[in-house]
Length: 150
Image 1 (cartoon, rainbow, N blue to C red):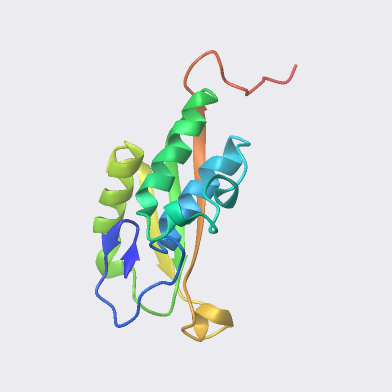
Image 2: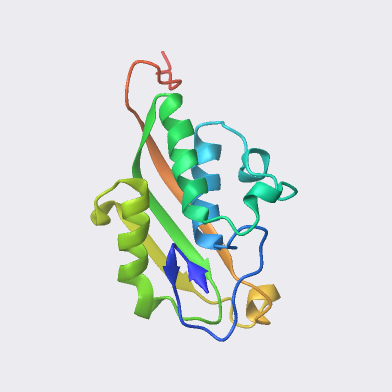
């Protein structure tokens, strides 16, 4: 299983048009949303053969590039993985390090946590994994679209 750009030993993998890395997809979508650049599906449609089996770190890097084009850099990132299995805690530091590397951040600016859904919903039934991410974008130059209210 690929999660956060890391190979996680597990009896099952994640299905997807790309490598199915739900953690990197959530982070990329958070960046795109925070800078009003659309969604992951808009930039990387799953009906394009060129995306089949693609490394999701490419999507995350492209999201960072789009944010930079709009005048932003990533301040920090926080993500939670919702899964009954695999447990995230044993892999947490490797996940943080890899995500930080992809984002070009110090590991101290990246948080990755795990939680279970206590048997509820598709994660609870072992049918999939969910990830939720938030990022802080900071103006990186005068092109920033952030305006101070008066």
